[in-house]
Length: 271
Image (cartoon, rainbow, N blue to C red; front, side, top):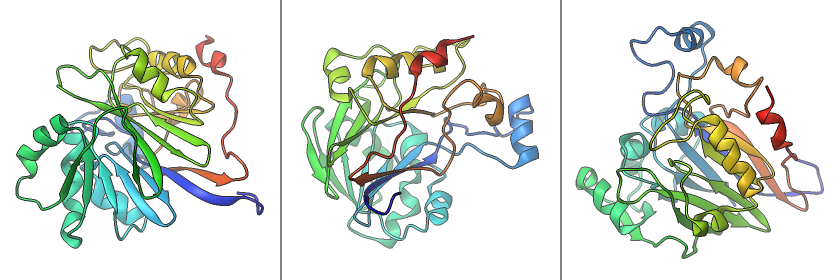
Protein backbone atom coordinates (compact mmCIF):
# COMPACT_ATOMS: atom_id res chain seq x y z
CA UNK A 1 0.00 0.00 0.00
CA UNK A 2 1.59 3.34 -1.04
CA UNK A 3 2.32 5.83 1.73
CA UNK A 4 -0.24 8.35 0.45
CA UNK A 5 -3.06 5.80 0.61
CA UNK A 6 -5.06 5.27 3.80
CA UNK A 7 -6.03 1.62 4.34
CA UNK A 8 -9.81 1.49 4.56
CA UNK A 9 -10.83 -2.16 4.08
CA UNK A 10 -9.19 -5.57 3.92
CA UNK A 11 -10.66 -8.78 2.51
CA UNK A 12 -9.09 -12.13 3.43
CA UNK A 13 -10.03 -15.51 1.93
CA UNK A 14 -9.90 -17.62 5.10
CA UNK A 15 -10.76 -20.78 3.20
CA UNK A 16 -11.05 -21.51 -0.52
CA UNK A 17 -12.24 -25.12 -0.45
CA UNK A 18 -15.54 -26.88 -0.93
CA UNK A 19 -17.41 -28.95 1.69
CA UNK A 20 -14.78 -31.72 2.24
CA UNK A 21 -11.79 -29.42 1.71
CA UNK A 22 -8.53 -30.46 0.04
CA UNK A 23 -6.95 -32.89 0.64
CA UNK A 24 -10.07 -35.00 1.07
CA UNK A 25 -10.01 -37.60 3.83
CA UNK A 26 -9.34 -41.02 2.28
CA UNK A 27 -8.73 -39.67 -1.23
CA UNK A 28 -5.49 -40.40 -3.05
CA UNK A 29 -6.09 -38.54 -6.29
CA UNK A 30 -3.30 -36.49 -7.87
CA UNK A 31 -4.43 -33.25 -6.23
CA UNK A 32 -4.93 -34.66 -2.73
CA UNK A 33 -1.56 -36.42 -2.85
CA UNK A 34 0.13 -33.24 -4.08
CA UNK A 35 -1.46 -31.29 -1.22
CA UNK A 36 -0.17 -33.82 1.32
CA UNK A 37 3.29 -33.91 -0.21
CA UNK A 38 3.80 -30.16 -0.41
CA UNK A 39 1.76 -29.16 2.63
CA UNK A 40 -0.93 -26.98 1.10
CA UNK A 41 -4.66 -27.12 1.82
CA UNK A 42 -7.97 -25.67 0.79
CA UNK A 43 -9.89 -25.20 4.02
CA UNK A 44 -13.63 -24.69 4.04
CA UNK A 45 -15.10 -21.44 2.75
CA UNK A 46 -15.17 -18.26 4.80
CA UNK A 47 -14.27 -14.65 4.02
CA UNK A 48 -13.06 -12.11 6.57
CA UNK A 49 -13.68 -8.43 5.96
CA UNK A 50 -11.82 -6.02 8.25
CA UNK A 51 -12.70 -2.35 8.49
CA UNK A 52 -11.39 0.16 11.02
CA UNK A 53 -10.08 -2.67 13.18
CA UNK A 54 -13.40 -4.52 13.27
CA UNK A 55 -14.12 -7.94 11.77
CA UNK A 56 -17.06 -9.18 9.71
CA UNK A 57 -17.21 -12.84 8.67
CA UNK A 58 -19.01 -14.02 5.56
CA UNK A 59 -19.93 -17.57 6.64
CA UNK A 60 -18.38 -19.50 9.52
CA UNK A 61 -16.33 -22.39 8.18
CA UNK A 62 -15.88 -25.70 10.06
CA UNK A 63 -12.16 -24.79 9.99
CA UNK A 64 -12.79 -21.42 11.65
CA UNK A 65 -10.80 -22.02 14.84
CA UNK A 66 -7.58 -22.47 12.89
CA UNK A 67 -8.45 -19.67 10.49
CA UNK A 68 -9.07 -17.09 13.24
CA UNK A 69 -5.97 -18.14 15.18
CA UNK A 70 -3.89 -17.85 12.02
CA UNK A 71 -5.17 -14.29 11.48
CA UNK A 72 -4.77 -13.34 15.16
CA UNK A 73 -8.46 -12.45 15.39
CA UNK A 74 -9.60 -12.02 18.99
CA UNK A 75 -13.08 -10.65 18.39
CA UNK A 76 -15.72 -10.90 15.67
CA UNK A 77 -18.20 -8.03 15.51
CA UNK A 78 -20.64 -9.59 13.06
CA UNK A 79 -21.39 -12.60 10.86
CA UNK A 80 -23.36 -13.02 7.64
CA UNK A 81 -24.64 -16.50 6.80
CA UNK A 82 -25.20 -17.02 3.08
CA UNK A 83 -27.07 -20.33 3.32
CA UNK A 84 -27.73 -23.33 5.53
CA UNK A 85 -25.15 -25.86 4.34
CA UNK A 86 -22.83 -27.29 7.02
CA UNK A 87 -19.60 -26.05 5.46
CA UNK A 88 -20.85 -22.46 5.66
CA UNK A 89 -22.07 -22.22 9.25
CA UNK A 90 -20.74 -25.08 11.42
CA UNK A 91 -17.68 -23.20 12.74
CA UNK A 92 -19.75 -20.54 14.50
CA UNK A 93 -19.20 -22.27 17.83
CA UNK A 94 -15.44 -21.89 17.50
CA UNK A 95 -15.55 -18.31 18.75
CA UNK A 96 -19.01 -17.43 20.05
CA UNK A 97 -18.25 -18.79 23.54
CA UNK A 98 -15.64 -16.08 24.16
CA UNK A 99 -18.04 -13.24 23.41
CA UNK A 100 -21.73 -12.99 24.18
CA UNK A 101 -22.87 -10.32 21.76
CA UNK A 102 -22.32 -11.78 18.28
CA UNK A 103 -24.68 -10.26 15.70
CA UNK A 104 -25.60 -12.56 12.81
CA UNK A 105 -27.30 -11.23 9.68
CA UNK A 106 -29.23 -13.23 7.10
CA UNK A 107 -32.66 -13.65 5.55
CA UNK A 108 -35.49 -15.07 7.68
CA UNK A 109 -35.39 -18.40 5.84
CA UNK A 110 -31.65 -18.91 6.33
CA UNK A 111 -31.92 -17.98 10.01
CA UNK A 112 -34.76 -20.45 10.44
CA UNK A 113 -32.91 -23.29 8.71
CA UNK A 114 -29.60 -22.77 10.54
CA UNK A 115 -31.39 -22.04 13.81
CA UNK A 116 -32.46 -25.69 13.99
CA UNK A 117 -28.82 -26.55 14.66
CA UNK A 118 -27.87 -23.46 16.67
CA UNK A 119 -30.68 -23.34 19.24
CA UNK A 120 -28.25 -24.03 22.10
CA UNK A 121 -26.07 -21.02 21.21
CA UNK A 122 -26.78 -17.45 22.22
CA UNK A 123 -26.40 -14.87 19.49
CA UNK A 124 -28.36 -11.93 18.13
CA UNK A 125 -30.10 -12.97 14.91
CA UNK A 126 -30.91 -9.99 12.70
CA UNK A 127 -33.21 -10.66 9.76
CA UNK A 128 -32.50 -8.69 6.60
CA UNK A 129 -34.01 -8.90 3.15
CA UNK A 130 -32.18 -9.11 -0.16
CA UNK A 131 -31.58 -5.85 -2.04
CA UNK A 132 -32.18 -3.81 1.13
CA UNK A 133 -28.77 -2.38 2.17
CA UNK A 134 -27.76 -2.27 5.82
CA UNK A 135 -24.67 -1.05 7.65
CA UNK A 136 -22.27 -3.20 9.64
CA UNK A 137 -18.80 -2.23 10.95
CA UNK A 138 -18.97 0.93 8.85
CA UNK A 139 -19.65 -0.91 5.59
CA UNK A 140 -22.67 -0.84 3.32
CA UNK A 141 -23.77 -4.45 2.88
CA UNK A 142 -26.42 -5.87 0.57
CA UNK A 143 -27.61 -9.46 0.32
CA UNK A 144 -28.43 -10.79 -3.14
CA UNK A 145 -30.61 -13.79 -3.98
CA UNK A 146 -28.67 -16.45 -5.87
CA UNK A 147 -29.68 -19.88 -7.16
CA UNK A 148 -28.51 -22.89 -5.12
CA UNK A 149 -31.18 -25.61 -5.43
CA UNK A 150 -32.90 -27.16 -3.58
CA UNK A 151 -32.47 -24.54 -0.83
CA UNK A 152 -35.25 -22.06 -0.11
CA UNK A 153 -32.80 -19.14 0.03
CA UNK A 154 -29.11 -18.66 -0.72
CA UNK A 155 -27.29 -15.36 -0.92
CA UNK A 156 -24.45 -13.49 -2.51
CA UNK A 157 -23.04 -10.50 -0.64
CA UNK A 158 -22.10 -7.02 -1.88
CA UNK A 159 -19.87 -4.84 0.31
CA UNK A 160 -19.18 -1.17 -0.40
CA UNK A 161 -17.13 1.63 1.12
CA UNK A 162 -15.45 4.80 -0.20
CA UNK A 163 -16.26 3.92 -3.80
CA UNK A 164 -14.87 0.39 -3.47
CA UNK A 165 -17.18 -2.52 -4.25
CA UNK A 166 -16.61 -6.20 -3.44
CA UNK A 167 -19.08 -8.81 -4.69
CA UNK A 168 -19.12 -12.35 -3.28
CA UNK A 169 -21.18 -14.78 -5.34
CA UNK A 170 -22.06 -17.27 -2.62
CA UNK A 171 -22.82 -20.83 -3.68
CA UNK A 172 -24.83 -20.60 -6.89
CA UNK A 173 -25.28 -21.71 -10.46
CA UNK A 174 -25.28 -19.25 -13.37
CA UNK A 175 -29.05 -18.74 -13.42
CA UNK A 176 -29.28 -15.41 -11.62
CA UNK A 177 -31.99 -12.80 -11.91
CA UNK A 178 -31.43 -9.46 -13.58
CA UNK A 179 -31.82 -7.87 -10.15
CA UNK A 180 -29.00 -9.99 -8.76
CA UNK A 181 -26.74 -9.22 -11.72
CA UNK A 182 -27.38 -5.50 -11.38
CA UNK A 183 -26.70 -5.53 -7.63
CA UNK A 184 -23.35 -7.34 -8.03
CA UNK A 185 -22.22 -5.56 -11.21
CA UNK A 186 -18.97 -3.61 -11.69
CA UNK A 187 -17.13 -4.84 -8.58
CA UNK A 188 -13.52 -3.94 -7.95
CA UNK A 189 -13.13 -7.50 -6.64
CA UNK A 190 -15.36 -10.47 -7.46
CA UNK A 191 -14.99 -13.50 -5.17
CA UNK A 192 -16.74 -16.25 -7.08
CA UNK A 193 -17.29 -19.93 -6.41
CA UNK A 194 -15.98 -22.39 -9.00
CA UNK A 195 -16.35 -25.97 -7.85
CA UNK A 196 -14.42 -27.68 -10.65
CA UNK A 197 -12.80 -27.30 -14.10
CA UNK A 198 -14.95 -26.76 -17.23
CA UNK A 199 -15.37 -30.47 -18.01
CA UNK A 200 -17.62 -30.79 -14.94
CA UNK A 201 -21.25 -29.69 -14.94
CA UNK A 202 -23.37 -29.13 -11.83
CA UNK A 203 -27.00 -28.31 -11.06
CA UNK A 204 -26.30 -26.06 -8.07
CA UNK A 205 -22.73 -24.84 -8.58
CA UNK A 206 -20.55 -23.26 -11.28
CA UNK A 207 -17.43 -24.62 -12.90
CA UNK A 208 -14.44 -22.37 -13.60
CA UNK A 209 -15.52 -21.35 -17.09
CA UNK A 210 -19.03 -20.48 -15.92
CA UNK A 211 -17.57 -18.45 -13.05
CA UNK A 212 -15.41 -16.45 -15.46
CA UNK A 213 -18.35 -15.91 -17.81
CA UNK A 214 -20.31 -14.51 -14.88
CA UNK A 215 -17.35 -12.31 -13.99
CA UNK A 216 -17.29 -10.97 -17.53
CA UNK A 217 -21.03 -10.34 -17.43
CA UNK A 218 -20.63 -8.37 -14.19
CA UNK A 219 -17.69 -6.36 -15.54
CA UNK A 220 -15.44 -7.25 -12.60
CA UNK A 221 -12.08 -5.44 -12.41
CA UNK A 222 -10.47 -8.38 -10.64
CA UNK A 223 -11.76 -11.91 -10.07
CA UNK A 224 -10.63 -14.66 -7.71
CA UNK A 225 -12.01 -18.20 -7.69
CA UNK A 226 -12.93 -19.89 -4.43
CA UNK A 227 -14.98 -22.85 -3.08
CA UNK A 228 -12.74 -25.08 -5.22
CA UNK A 229 -12.70 -28.89 -5.02
CA UNK A 230 -10.04 -31.55 -5.48
CA UNK A 231 -11.37 -32.04 -9.03
CA UNK A 232 -9.03 -29.19 -9.97
CA UNK A 233 -5.39 -30.12 -10.56
CA UNK A 234 -2.82 -29.04 -7.94
CA UNK A 235 -2.81 -25.33 -7.16
CA UNK A 236 0.39 -24.51 -9.07
CA UNK A 237 -1.14 -26.04 -12.18
CA UNK A 238 -4.51 -24.30 -11.74
CA UNK A 239 -2.80 -20.91 -11.67
CA UNK A 240 -1.51 -21.40 -15.22
CA UNK A 241 -5.09 -21.16 -16.47
CA UNK A 242 -7.38 -19.73 -13.78
CA UNK A 243 -7.23 -16.93 -11.17
CA UNK A 244 -7.50 -19.38 -8.29
CA UNK A 245 -7.55 -17.98 -4.80
CA UNK A 246 -5.62 -19.53 -1.93
CA UNK A 247 -6.22 -19.73 1.79
CA UNK A 248 -5.38 -16.48 3.64
CA UNK A 249 -5.03 -14.48 0.43
CA UNK A 250 -5.45 -10.78 1.23
CA UNK A 251 -6.86 -7.90 -0.78
CA UNK A 252 -6.35 -4.39 0.61
CA UNK A 253 -8.21 -1.29 -0.44
CA UNK A 254 -7.31 2.26 0.42
CA UNK A 255 -8.71 5.75 0.22
CA UNK A 256 -6.89 7.42 -2.66
CA UNK A 257 -6.23 4.35 -4.80
CA UNK A 258 -7.81 1.01 -5.67
CA UNK A 259 -5.40 -1.79 -4.88
CA UNK A 260 -6.62 -4.11 -7.62
CA UNK A 261 -5.21 -4.81 -11.05
CA UNK A 262 -7.09 -4.70 -14.30
CA UNK A 263 -7.62 -8.20 -15.72
CA UNK A 264 -8.05 -9.21 -19.35
CA UNK A 265 -10.89 -11.69 -18.94
CA UNK A 266 -10.62 -12.86 -22.54
CA UNK A 267 -7.33 -14.59 -21.69
CA UNK A 268 -9.12 -17.06 -19.46
CA UNK A 269 -10.97 -18.55 -22.43
CA UNK A 270 -7.91 -19.18 -24.60
CA UNK A 271 -6.74 -22.76 -25.13
